[in-house]
Each structure stands twice: as structure tokens, then as C-alpha cells.
Image 1 (tube, rainbow over the protein chains, first blue to last red):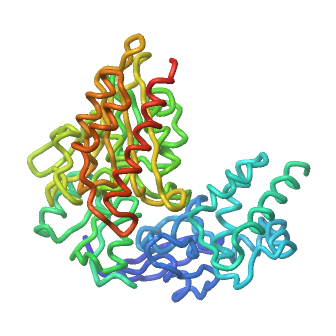
Image 2 (image 1 turned 180 degrees about the horizontal axis):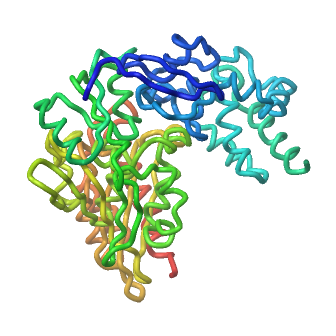
Length: 160
Length: 282
């Protein structure tokens, strides 16, 4: 009924995964340590920095505040999956062009969080972009270039 | 950090959850959205024997109007509440507060019930519940009970919930044409816990306000009703209300600000929220 080790069946980036995890394993540690998907980063481990952002059942979540055991039956997408599918190729390109990253530690989380905003359509104001990204820390860029990149992609997608 | 070892159980029903909690004599924790619980476990501020996941329990994620109240199920995610037309129309205070609660990824996962059950003294929702004079529905080994918001918050992270209880819903009075609400907070970064915040509701009759309820957060161990300030606003004088805060609030220093700064900020918020209460036209 209750256990310290749990069997889970998860779809990760479209692939079915069956694993046994410790109950205390967070989703981001499961992805990194058990599946080798190291694009999701571990920062603060208490939900403040956003480096561990992944998508569960289509919405962004903190990978450090979700247990792998809770993801039984869930659809998980990481930066690797979203990158390989081409879903955010334009956003990645805009980040590159505008120097919206330096060390890159926050970038996977930034991209996934920005994509959630962009999927709503329209061109959000710079204030709305900043508000949406408020849960993702970047210690290098000062955010301006990130906001520039997200705004540029919103405009470009609006025209497409 | 990583959590200490614990066991995990997915509750099939409310009764199952209560049974599991009862078997562990205060050493089990309810896992809803996990946005505070898992952080607490990661930091090893808590190391329970068992985590009881209530996410699979059916029927706890509804938003519905009943008998002049809006009932929000414990498992309603902040993001769902934010998108709810019923909440926009009938609980304007909750709609005002929602964008201030955490960040998008937190709101996608965090639950209304979890926020109220945790009762962080700097959190928005407990103060909104208090400002609206709502009720909390609790299920435990001895059945279900309702607790008024004024009686629910007992102390720092301490509520009317016992170790074997599950918060199942909150009920808030639906807005009428006379309802006025106000909300404002100061925080260092949008979405962070407030340095000081204020949630307010009142009933307008012509130009005067009645049944004023002011719930400050970030100023003590629980959300705090500012009763002198409430009386001041009901008498129509914002200055008197602000003066009343001297008696109402005695915020302790914390990592964010000193008590003196918090008191000053509380006065600023009161003026802003009073303007919101008086300006609204239905």
C-alpha cells in the first residue's frame, strides 16, 4: 500500500519508460540520474530558481517540487524533447542571436517557460513577459536580452 | 538538498487518505500540489515516515456555486482558479490575488487547499479566505466539519487541521452588487512571498462601507485582521483607519524587513486598498 520504492510508467519525450524509483526521488533527479537527460538543471532545489523546469501533461512545473513517483501515467517533456521536435527552434535561434544566455544554466527553464507564454498567442507586453518569467532566475544576462528574444518570437509568430 | 527517506502512498479515496494518516500518528503528510511540502522535505525541515498523495482522489477539484457561496475544491490548481470565469465573476478578490501567487510553474501545480492548509503567514490565499469571511471544510476520522476562517488560523503554520485531517474545500461568499474588494502587496520579486500584503472586502451602501474586513499578511504568525482600521474605514475616514494600525499590527522583524518598515508599508497598502474599496462601481 505504501512503499519506499515505487514502480512508475512514464512517457518521457514520447518514449515509454518503466522504472522503479525511490519515493523521495524528485522528477528532475529521475530525469538526470536515471534517464541521463541532463538538460534540466538542478539549482536551488526548493522551487525558487526555475532551472529544473520541465513540462508534465503539457504544462511547465518545477522538476524539484514534483516527485517522480507522482508522475506515474504522466507525459513528461524535457528540453531535449522540445528541442529535438523543433517546437522551439525559432525561440532558441532568437536566444542565440540576441545573446540571451551566457552560462546557459537557466536557459532550458527559460525556454520552456517562455514557450508556455508564447503558446497563448498574441504579442505579450514586455511587462507581461517579465512577469511570466519571474520564476526563472538568470544571473548572467540581466534579463533584457531574454525579454527581447521572447518579444521578437511573439511578433514573428504573430506574422507567420 | 535531497529529502530523507520516506514512503509514498497514493490515496484511492478520502477515507483511504484519512486511514493512512491515522496509521502514522502524526508522522504522515498530505501531498497535494507539493509546492511547499516538497521544498520543505528537500531542505529536510521535515522528515515524515509517509507522504500521502491525494491527487488521485476524485471529486476534490471542482469549482461550484452553492447557496450564495462559491466552493473551491482542495485540489483546484491555482492556474485553474486563475482561468475560472466563475471565480472572476463571483470572487473578485481571489481573481485579484491569483497573479501574485508564485510563478506560472508553481501555479500550474500548487493547489488552493494546499495553500490554505499550510497557512504560510506571508501567503495570499489564507488572507483572502480571512478577508472574505469564508469557511474551510475538513474531513477527518470523525467525519466532516466546517471551520470559519476567523477560527481556522491558530499560529505559525498551525491551523484547526489535526494530523489525521484532510482539508477538502474552502467556501467563500459569492460577490453581490454591493461587494467591494481590494488587494495589494509588496514583494521583492513578482510572485515571491509578500513582505507585507493586504486583502480586503466590504459591503457598500451608497457612499459608505460596511462589514469591512482587512486581512494583512506577512505581519505575524497568521494572517491578521486589523479591527481598528476596519472600524476607521467603516466610519469613512482613511486617516483614522491608518492610525488604527498602530494598535492592530505589531509585525516582528524578519529576513525581508524590520517590523518598523513592515508597519510603514502596511499603512501605504491600507491607503491603496481603501482607494480600491471606495472607487469600485458595480
